Length: 496
Image 1 (cartoon, one colour):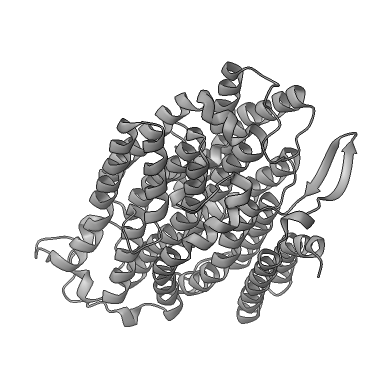
Image 2 (spheres, rainbow, N blue to C red; image 1 turned 90 degrees about the vertical axis):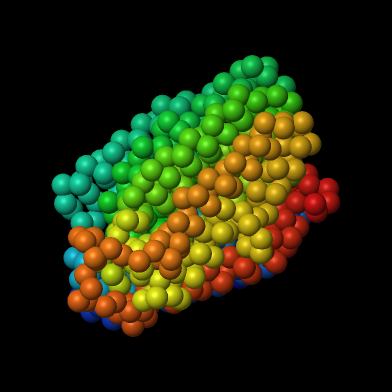
């Protein structure tokens, strides 16, 4: 298959899978088999696209020209392919986990669940392979509406309220600052095509470029930059596989990916680096610390992980704002490493609920002996998200610190070091509570008459977190290969 055919296949295959899921919905085993085959097929297509990528031969594919110069266009490029690889690689594991989880919970509306999941992946592929801002915007909006039924899945009063907040935040930010920034870019540059080196240099003075960058940063609501982050904790009313989708596979990663792509192909890294992003550096760094402090106050495991995601996403925004090739490299690696670490943690939180019927940190004292393999997987995910070796999450933190040192931002170095300590402070206690705290006899959550074991877990809810935890270690070794893949397009002359 040609590169153009592979791009089309990557986008259309999830939509075809969704259609087949609807057709086979009355037969549970067949429907789930269709989901897994679709996920495997997408992974094969995307990794063939990555393996055969040739920058010199990467011609755009124009699907339609709605107005003169206004095209629906696809184009493969390294950063987009990294995002596509993350989403495609994790869809299969998330699908396995979803089967184990949704069956164990006897969840209703499972056919709709799997179909919307597939549609969300199709939208993520369209975002990853967009050739201009107009195409990306349409796919970005489609992703919001495709995931709404997933957030509202339980259809309880809390789920309905959380889903409405999710939709209100993301639609409002898209239609005002994001769309406004796109229109302004069109007026200033006369094009919306993603172009290496950017399209805005010399079109606006640096003060206006700083304003435009702020509009993009807050317009891309899926990046969850504080204070427009409230939709993310609200969306935790969804089933745990959906939370994993939101935080690791598609939604928030689509947000920070969009910011990275805008930085590299609309502004240009050098343009941002000459001071355009300085105020955004302050905002992003503050978000890292504030969200981390808020995570420490949350007893509910999914809420704690949600605020952790806000903090970790802010590091990608920080990387964009620094405007240094090494910082952009850190942002790309954070997109990958956070995905694998955070999906491990969400898988773990959901599996704890399935095995022990507990959702809060205060409830899980002493469960480590009952689910040791699961808790070790959670520990691996936590250490990777915190940025410690030998886990993949070390690399983005290390490169961000190096970028801050290069720009003589000592305060930022301290901030990044503090963020590591705070991350350990709100994630490692999950493992400590499970292994080293004994439940009190008067604890209302302690049920000594019922003993829970890993055998109580559906095997499909245990295998995925173990695999993704191992992936956090593998990515520590694989990080230089990812950097080498994106280095030409971000102007990274040599690997650090």
